[in-house]
Length: 199
Ligand SMILES: [Zn+2]
Picture 1 (spheres, rainbow, N blue to C red):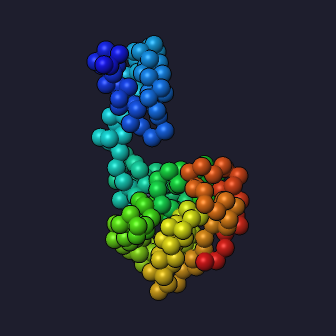
Picture 2 (picture 1 turned 30 degrees about the vertical axis):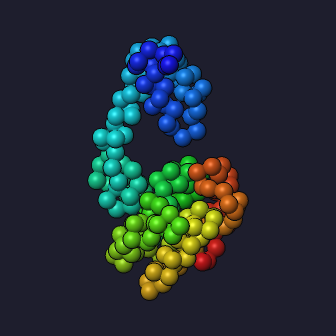
Picture 3 (picture 1 turned 180 degrees about the vertical axis):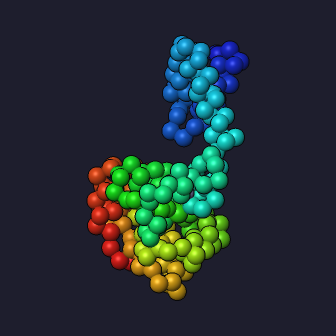
């Protein structure tokens, strides 16, 4: 039998489905939300609603944004000759926080993972090829995660882009092999960007 009242029990269930949140943490969060000022709890609910209704992918780079183009693509202060290719919007965020890169990005929205049934067609590679063909990029920096699938994705893309007169580089291994960009600290990412090498 459930020991909580209906609404509390439902919130605990929902919170418990979040990655990394177990039953105990879900209960702690639910009771925390009951204790904080009502406005604070409602602001969280509104923020969740807004990311589902207002957030979409940038039409140029597939970063998350609320308009047709993201703030980076709209900015006129970026170096439009360098394009950094990442797997996910959160990787882009990590690179931005390092403040070591002032070019543009392209988010693949995944990586090639044959074992999970994810092929190149499910990523934004066609759009990337169009951008490289139509843009004035001189360097494409592959910043996929330094693991087997990330490396495979990067290799695939560098082959696809081989017909264009651009230099293709990849991040140096300031980032520990086998880890993911999302968890790398600012210094590791800055290091990896500065020490990037030709692919
Ligand atoms: Zn964008």
